[in-house]
Length: 575
Ligand code: C2E
Ligand code: MG
Ligand code: MG
Image (tube, rainbow, N blue to C red; front, side):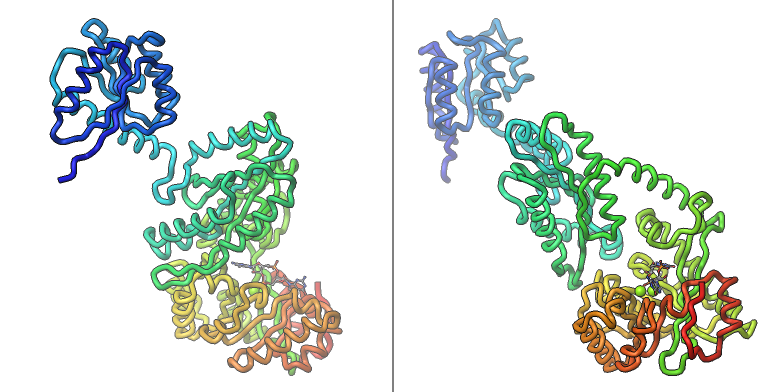
């Protein structure tokens, strides 16, 4: 068997003692000791900086250093080197103190033989290793091997010092993965962990050696950029990160799409304290989430106020459902060929006690974040079904009603059960119900989406793909999903009669959708001039302010009494 080699440096001014140690080590049968010897602490410093040793044997009374100071200064010079202290019988107490101050073991001279000395050296090496492991765990995240919150904080302090000294700036980026909790819940924690590891590798590849990436926990990461000239530098990195995260990830046979929101704050001198920077980056991150996820936002002074507002809003949202503050508005969809009413889309509103009537853009993301959105989906569904039944009962109209489901609502475990239950309770025939989902909802997990959609379809519910053109627009994927309808997003429709290449896209989408047996609805039609193009290209239906804005139930009833079931030959703009 190969004998293990251990490199020892003895620091000892007494030559007799030194020779004795050397002889004792030579007696060992299990180890080969590569032995070196110096007589002073000064020589020890230079020796340990030039050479590698496995362990240091240290006499506590040297000509140029005595007692505990000796140990402490050596630990400072090389914190990774295990130390065994040698003491006389009279200063055994000091030797024990030395162990508390960074040495791994001690021996009293003249006590014990070769075996004991060897055991002590081995023990010191092992102990150092476990100390290092503990300190690693205190500073690094086990899953991703990235620095954790504690070490991040340290590095941020260093980066601030560095920026203060130099003419360049530093930047702190706070990242939070969008919908990660959702994906984690659905795929399980093992897959969630795999995802985090993959994403942390991608992030690592986006930054330079001198920058630093940490994981604060969960799906929160930070990046510190050093030597930044201006915003352009940081925006470049932010864009690179967005792109890297967006690429699909294969996990357990699932193709996962994820995006990240980023909050950024720049710093340049010692007035920038870590706590404030983190808080500001956090505010910028929230602003990024509000802007619609997958974006980066720089911190601005005014953000302080908007965070308070946000916290108040979240508080209020917790009571909104019980206080009956939500309301559905309805917007008609019209058949282009006949001018007849095709259906209604239900759109949520929040009647806020102080702020008045709020559109979904002001609160749906907050519902998502707090998880309240799940409860809301049941409410919307049942409210819409009840309303539709009423219209039919009162002979106002016989049509389908569309509701919108966000990704989180769509992928919740109980969706099918809820839908079945609500249809049963309200007695609405499934063919009068339509569910709208967006492309990105489908792409968070294609396979699962196909399953959910097929089951909804099996119930007899109509399915519509919303905001088409704004997401991944993967036309090849479209054929995998059982949709009956495709809604072209407003941003495209807006360009009709102005930009011919957008018109070409719309025409192609209509042809493609028809090829897949889907009806096409144009969203956000505001001007009469848009109609001829849509008619010519065979678009099936339209929805937009040109015909009617979304209406409260009361207004909608009147509108239906006037227009429902009748032809709508001339566009009329109702408020
Ligand atoms: P969406 O499903 O694409 O709904 C169409 C949005 O376009 C509605 O905005 C509607 O008011 C607006 N719109 C319709 N015609 C026109 C037009 O001619 N011009 C312009 N500029 N806008 C028009 P709204 O009601 O603010 O809803 C925004 C989004 O919020 C919806 O987009 C939908 O994604 C989401 N949303 C609405 N209600 C719900 C809900 O109950 N649950 C969920 N999860 N999301 C909802
Ligand atoms: Mg919609
Ligand atoms: Mg839409």
